[in-house]
Length: 395
Image 1: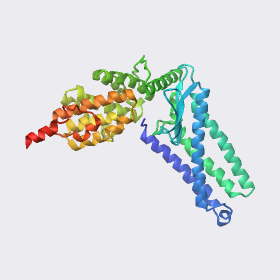
Image 2: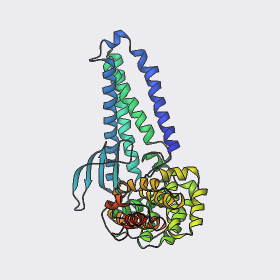
Image 3: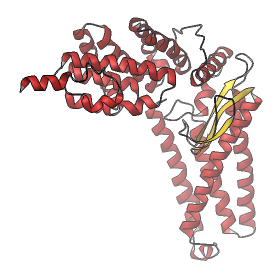
Image 4: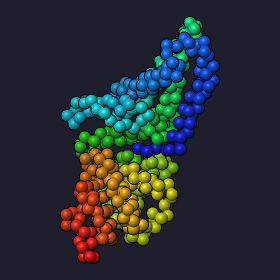
């Protein structure tokens, strides 16, 4: 889930600031020719290896902290990924080694509550900080011993390990929704039992969807946050699956109305959904006007084609409002990748809605040839050849 890009830049700027201060104020004065001669290898290579080691160690510590905290908080584990490597639970309940993408700075641990009311996510949030405290103590001892024994190699190791840890944990506890999942954002919003239960409800439903289990939707939230938006999205897809686009728009509108309470990515995804569905159910001029009047950021988000909602919207905007075959094809070229990121149930729903979207474009432009995209299976065999037939008739 895309978060607040601006706050992400602030977090990265703070991390860079820490790195520069340590580099020029602390490390540079130590790098005299006499001190450097005591290092076991070239000074630049040594610093590079220490930084790399610090990244690996801290990535491992954060995810081990999440793992330990999840167990303490009464959660089961669906997947544990550190720097793209880890394990995932299969449908038979067994964990299997896996390479995987992750929504975090260095990894990701997917958890499932054992009890919606009693499972406590705060352990999951705070346990990585315990690992950081232990690492900080060890680093300070290394620095102190290195200074006392005039061992620059050990002193540098302690300084760089502590610096890398500080930068990574600064990002992890930054109190805002940023461009990767971070614990600081969870600290802010899990400040009440109702929010904890909503978070656990979301985690459970995400697990049920991922494993093809029946999902019981008991509530649609009027006041939407990033968590409750995820729960509402389940009801949204239920309506989408039934072809009830008006109901889907009604649910989606709750997220748009909560603009100040959700992250920018969640809001822009909702705007993309509304743009696309408007062209399917609203009068053409109304749908076109909504898109034209949309903020520039919303238009850029759709044009980036980062997910299937944006692909659907861009197919309809390009094909119907802007009448651009090239841009419609540009969206279709991203369709397969966008669909591949979805769970099985949502894949089927999204493929059908994308098919309806493309068919609407074909009706408006029967002379446009989409035969290059037959592999997507979006057009029936009876419909796909229409463009070629039209060309033949023209000749």
